[in-house]
Length: 256
Ligand code: PEP
Image (cartoon, rainbow, N blue to C red; front, side):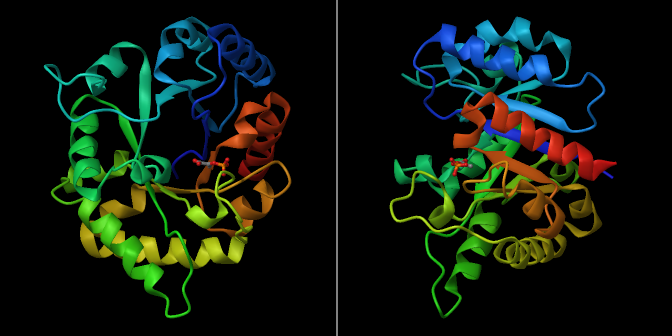
């Protein structure tokens, strides 16, 4: 069985490299060397270089929050997957709802996933609906996101991809957000597993599916135990070393 994974998405935080290092070190310090849980931190691009040396303990891996689809060239403002790999990133979050709001489409996410895989990065593909409508159209939306974002991805590569189910209505930055329950999560995870199985056959069983949406030290156990997931994508709570470590410990305890 694949290792459980806890990924911290720092988003556009903290404001200085010094603060980033402090937060990172306080997380690394408390992680057990023999932890069976994979722990990943995705800081802003700028901090990767600095955090590289602190991540050498191998207790924690680094990831990015986006990557472009081309290797090199005239793409002002973009960062390529190869650059990220050379900066020690091994994971990359793609298709996050906050980037979709800024214009990211399933088509661009699809190109980015293929480029990330070619560069040796593990894509963490975010999918999820903005609202849960009574006619259950949100299932179709997630199905379309998966179909279009994973279009043309080879069966032999899918085991490397992590799917993050993030209902946008539960994310901490959403105005008037609501709490998702582990039952909400489980229902969608079963649906996602079915779509992936129809698309990729038995290889899909190797894919990890995680949950994100205000996950914290209080509800982590419920999501991990009852939500049908292989881990969590943690935003706000990953900016608090104590809370993030607590989440990792909860995951560890369930792994025993
Ligand atoms: C996210 O946006 O990826 C996320 C998980 O955020 P939060 O935990 O803050 O809702």
